[in-house]
Image (tube, rainbow, N blue to C red):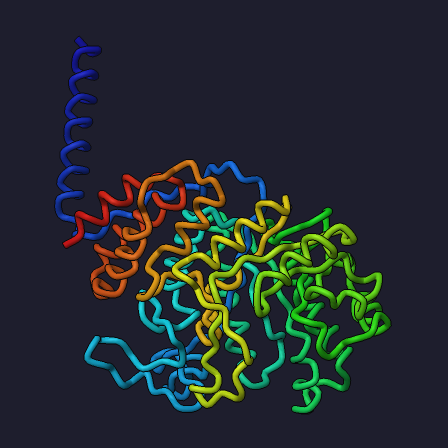
Length: 415
């Protein structure tokens, strides 16, 4: 009898607890379900060449900048993005228009959009154009935007490395911020070592962190680079621009190709220079058309490479394939001022990253680029809705874990 009463007692308690919990849940205020997170999954592809893309983190809008003005890279000297044409596009210093419109490089929604597009096109990582640590010109802004970018790279499952602009060292000295150009470079390199090089997704080649230099332009002797690198615990795998490694001497591990006039320079690099280098990084580009003269930003570069309906990119990717490269740099993701962008534009749509996807041999041939753009558009449209943002967070998590069908379904449910 006691056993029966005990069981009955516990049974009643269990029912009471269950009802209480249910009642408690029913009365709790509606709040968005926390998104399920997933580790990033690498995209499957057949091309073993590591594909990196050169990235400019230097764009500002009138909402993001301290002075509430559009940044120079959208305006140059004479363009005003506050002027909106009949076609709905802002006036910017470029012959081409980003599909998502002009943006702030530190905007998390923009970064999410860029990195997901890269991932699904088969790009392995980002080579970030970097202007050092000194508060000169817009360098601090570039550094801050860079670190917003880096914060999301790991979540998406992409690598990165720094492309150091050593020209900044002279500007740091001229501004009274550094005592010498080598001292400025040492400060910048120490920062990289302490904040970037040890990241698990920082690109390593031959076991050492990869560092590219856009030049050298100021530090033009091996002795200067030896002096700069002597302060580092681990000397990086250091690549200069093509035909410039002599200026770094034994400090240079190799060179990377760039864009110039026509493809004969690439052919020469692959045929004559690459065999002599320990590390060689090729290049591919869709065209080159700078806006400097029209934008009042100085003299034009003096030559143009027409896109030729995608034929220029086809040719440079074909040259890269035939060169059997270990590393390829796409030039560039978003240099709108020079017209070299792979980023989707009004003019070219997704055609350039579709070509990269084919080159990479991405196995998932499903169309996802428009859905990634839709994710961005909804981020902006629904910025005031916590519920919608949680769903979009979940869609992002599906995308990075290679579950695009689930991501699309969730995106399409948001009205």
